Amino acid sequence: MWQAEYVRDCLKKLYPGCDVQILGMTTRGDQILDRALSKVGGKGLFVKELETALEDGRADLAVHSLKDVPMVMPEGFDLACVMAREDARDAFVSNEYANLEDLPKGAVVGTSSLRRESVLRAKFPHLEIQPLRGNLDTRMGKLDRGEYQAIILAAAGLKRLGLEERIRAYLPYDPYTPAAGQGALGIETLSQHPKIKQWLAPLNDAPTLYAVSAERMVSRQLGGSCEVPLAAHAVWDAQQMQIQSFVASTDGKNICLAKGQAKVSSIEDAEALGLKIANELIAQGAMDLIPKMTK
Image (cartoon, helix red, strand yellow):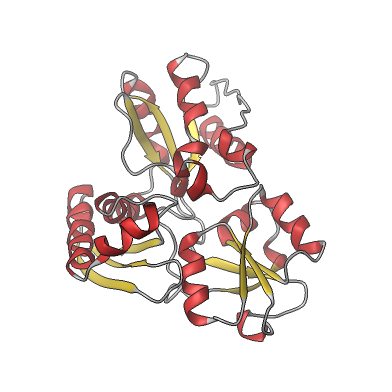
């Protein structure tokens, strides 16, 4: 809802005479909280109901956390706008401990991400990693009730909801590389409404758009979903892009890593770099890890 209100406010600043209304919706991804996303359908669970509202004409645009948007858009739908990215890092949240290194043997750490789980299991085999689902309030409530000694969340969500003070430590991009699109907002529209895409154009942020285009290409080539511990993070500045990515087994014992940089001045350039990184991961054996995760 914060994301929808933020986009509404941005649009009203751009077009003061425009009436922007919010159609609040609950998706299956919000409703199914007793199982990991990888077990119940993955990223699309947060998107489908909103796409149905677009098809039915009840909504003109849908606002998503970009990391929840499937890497291949359905026919008839466009990712019309990518807004400026918030902090893309993961955050360590705990009421008792200052960082992951301080956690004692057997401490329970909650995360909803196989990507985070793979890194935590590799670096801290003495910790107990448990699934954590629900909206931000639900997850923080479970921590505060003592069900977990610590939880790992996207820093962007905490910052957007004014909970930055709960962050005890930011996890570095290496080795805690974020998911493709983490921290960015994407706006989806129907392909048959190009005028809406034109209206949204001023909200596009080129550095974020180029970065997530490269990240999503990596994920697309590797079948990225909630069932695959896959990370990809890019930064674009002054025509230069740097990107790092990994694919891992959930236990963290097997990992393929790739980094690269290139001059990027278009989405096509960004996707070409993403494709290069994906091919490097595949050459290292990344595809051998992926079927083990999806069977």
